[in-house]
Length: 173
Ligand SMILES: Nc1ncnc2c1ncn2[C@@H]1O[C@H](COP(=O)(O)OP(=O)(O)OP(=O)(O)O)[C@@H](O)[C@H]1O
Ligand SMILES: [Mg+2]
Image 1 (spheres, protein in one colour):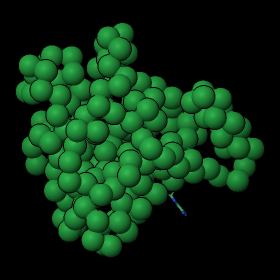
Image 2 (cartoon, helix red, strand yellow; image 1 turned 60 degrees about the vertical axis):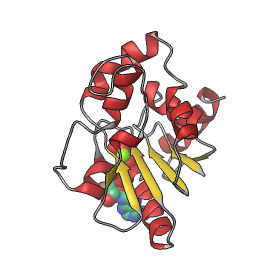
Image 3 (cartoon, helix red, strand yellow; image 1 turned 90 degrees about the vertical axis):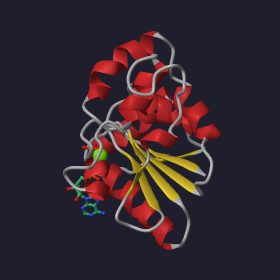
């Protein structure tokens, strides 16, 4: 099952919920993957600490390969190469990276919005996948909404957060 956690409102607990639901899934013995699509890298830091080995293995490298750039160029476009083990059994993560920012307009203009979904459909071995998103409807959050089978929208019980809920619904169709 692929789940995205999304709300355009910031600070409503997206990353916290992503990591906690993934941790519960892993503790229950399910092989679980977290994909961090937010340049803030909060889920990455929760699961791997401030620094992680091999920062060339991130979701940015996957998207670079979609553009024919980077380490995994040549149209390989697989997620297997960018998955990190976490210190927790059954729990894996694909980290975010600051390069996501610069890649976004090129990915958008070259219609790469379905690439994440296609790659996740090819990815084998995971029982549950949780995708953390940035607090904005951009290329990455739209890619995640297209790629996921279920969407969780955390929100605060205040007016602005409630308004964002309606905007999410309108903009994601
Ligand atoms: N259930 C909760 N109860 C109390 N505090 C919480 C809860 N969930 C998250 N928080 C706190 O709220 C803050 C924001 O949480 P988090 O970073 O998960 O939000 P976010 O939606 O991912 O933010 P952003 O939009 O910036 O990515 C954090 O300081 C976190 O510790
Ligand atoms: Mg977050």
